[in-house]
Length: 324
Image (cartoon, rainbow, N blue to C red; front, side, top):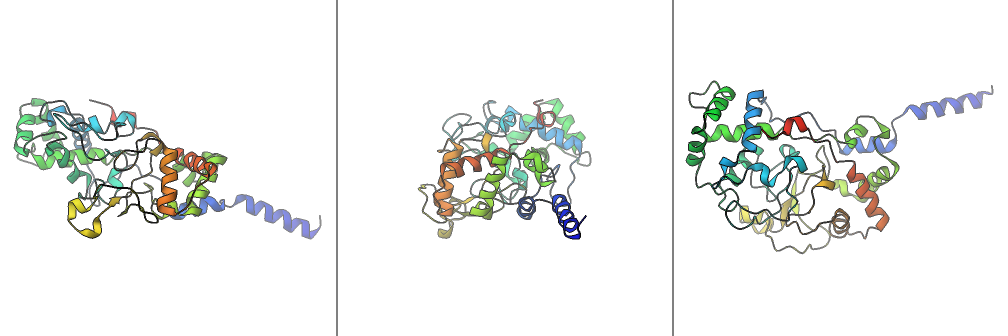
């Protein structure tokens, strides 16, 4: 065999064994989901996670025993309720779309306006919100749960070191411990881990668009978002009557600033945006092209990006989230 042919064949074999360039680039911006997302230095016990699961479904946490965390964040449907805004326990509706609780523990802050630093802290707001679950104070929450013998046992099992384990702070800690395991691994995780066949050709083209056009500037990391707050409409003004983060901080520079949402399971969590007014994923992608990238995406680009986003739909951990 001629030396030049031997060299050529060797180069072909070497190239075939290398990681595809698109996969290399994707790994620079994204990461597979972990098994859990516990806070640094924290490792919840199984009894705490089980208590949190029961509390997540507990309607006694609402003033008229009709609402639980799961009412607006239905774990069977990727942690949301499919409504633009959610009805309250007694009257009215929430002002903003209820975001998915899957991957929420990975976010830099909670709520669209980032007013809360963690899932543990976040859990207190809906329970005490007069429109959402409507409980007037923490004492009544504790009183209701103490009247249920099973909860006295569950709290004692979860926090055996406490003289009085059934208290507000422990309730929030338990709900947070459960929510930190709400992660749904998807085909994209397998792709990042080396399975080049986990995405089909259209999804790979969509990933190329996502990287090349700059979507990745805001939607990166393992959750593909959730790691920053910024003004909506970076390139073109976005029609928005909501003051965003400014309602929490009172600062003029926070007008129209919202948390960048995670794109995990995005194909299953319509409607979109903070007000839930966009019902189709294709329309949400097109609007992002206009207002965030200053690009008019072609219909084919929109569809291929949506195909890529479909690869972010994970498998719901049915045993972990089953209703008690």
